[in-house]
Length: 356
Image (cartoon, rainbow, N blue to C red):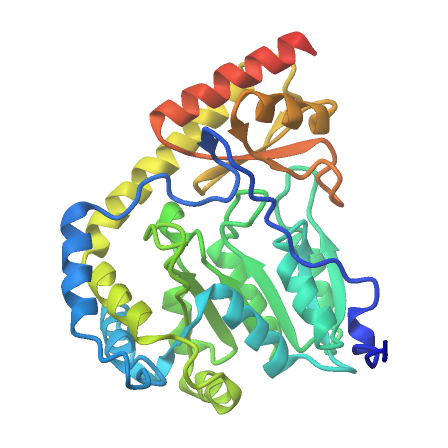
């Protein structure tokens, strides 16, 4: 058999991103909403999809949805960019502002895709470890950007997998300290009900990421968006895939976004449920640490977490195992689910800790 040419060097030793989806009674591992779209909104979506001409290409920039998002945030259309989920937009970030000879700052532990995208684009990753309580080492980040060789910085607020939000004051200090592009990933921002959007008017180097996957119950529909200065958004438009957001996703997004107030109410309930989970975990003596959360999930530390994960899964509960990750030794992450799922998790965890 004739062999195929070797792939690019950036792929050497690279492990594909694996969300580790497994069937379970309580799927509380992926930070999704436990609640599907309501029947009333589904009916509106069905009507919208019925009007989609499948034989025609979609609007390349999803301008109707761009206009809706822009108006809701007090921006112009030219300050909004839609993408095929936040994941596409994160890859576009590395393509637009990273390459060989450039550097990015990653505040770890963080979403693994940031470093993965940097490596794929041959961008050097400068890691700034978080403090023991998982808060950002703000002075370390500011000192590193002061060296003047950073092209982009990723700050996640609230952070995945640790849960805490970055302070507004820190983000403003960071923006003033560098001309690097500062991408603030607010994928979980709706749960914290906070944003650095107000800083956009004075800082061309700010870019904000949002997604429909979490608070808007659309993980199954790949749709995300950037908010930024017109100059930065224009750079992304130069090379983005022209039809990455299909007509069906655009139709669904417009309907869901028109009901955003309803989804925000559910987001508040899930954020409160996450805090209740954190409080319950703190009452368990075997749980060594429960990290502060501003989101819909909780990171906690328990001895022999890998074994505990398996014991939970044996009882039908799927959480996320971070126990072998850098900076998250013996940590598990649980997403706030329905009241029934949350109770099943707590009971299963008590059983696992007692048995162990």
